[in-house]
Length: 99
Image (tube, rainbow, N blue to C red; front, side, top):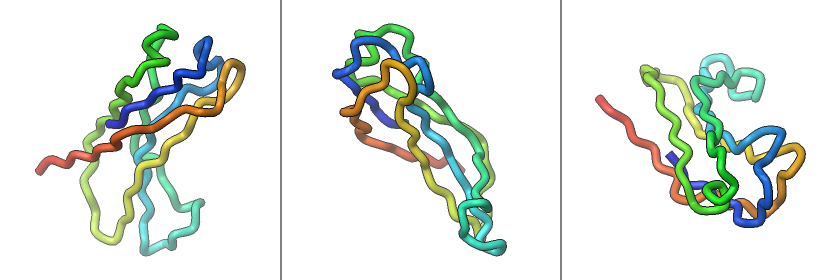
């Protein structure tokens, strides 16, 4: 889960909304980018500009068995396309794991 805010937007981005992606890399095959595998992703689903301008949650959830010799990381892709603007902020990224 993370909080996202871009108060500079006057309209929702038309291209890609901000997205959280859980990536994994099998260290036995190397750490080069082509070995990265997206396990799960979640784009911002906000549909109202005023809500998008305010701080709001993007929640990514999945059930992934954590493997030995595997690196995991969270990737964040910002907004793109028409109506996208610089100045967005990603706040308070949290990762929770259950056993």
